[in-house]
Length: 64
Image (cartoon, rainbow, N blue to C red; front, side, top):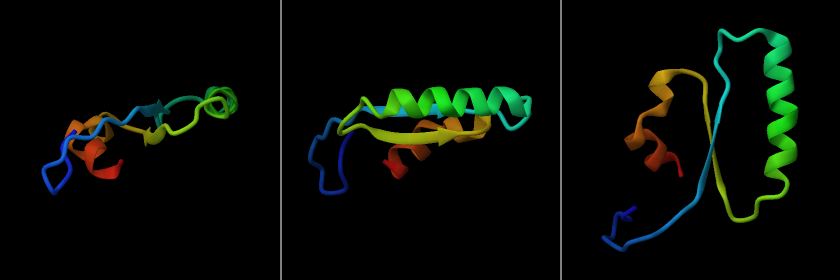
């Protein structure tokens, strides 16, 4: 990605997906599993998506 000053920068982003229409039991299972996974990541940015609109690359770049 490129910063606002024009410098090149690399970032690893963990994108978590939890569909708002998923059953509640599935959401809890995913949440606990992804939390355990994220504990082992260091220096990784997280982005949570809940709909297809959230997966817009420009929006992801803005938030991280």
